Image (cartoon, rainbow, N blue to C red):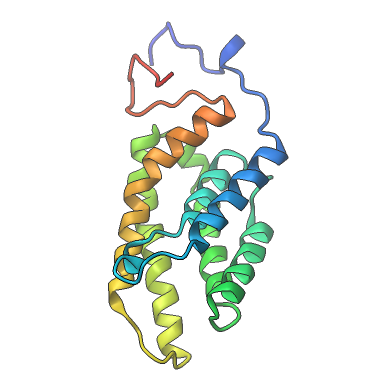
Length: 182
């Protein structure tokens, strides 16, 4: 630990709480992005933008986007995708629960480290939706949709940088990085 860096953030490093309106707007926009009519040729590559934004906010502002929000968005996802009620709700709640249980640890990592920690959660959510669909007797399980979880893991970093910029938080990519993205 260096003597230059204080243990507790000081002055401008101290951040104001994230407005609830900002969290709500970004979650609605992410949900709309997820619902866009993607062409069938690339539909299996489309990440779950809602979960990406939900995981970001559950780490940065856990009181604004917690398990209740995850459950509500999951039920909306089930209804709009025409799936059995509870598939997305279960996967969102489980994903956010894991992220919330790791939240203290994830706060100490730069964005790249968070992306590495969240990748198994994002891929696991896609796997859970596919497995529950197969278990409940979905007509056809297309395992290519696991690629959507991988794409979600890859886009988490740019989305986190964008949301950091929108919320006024410093975006630190690597540990002990002297520069922040401005």
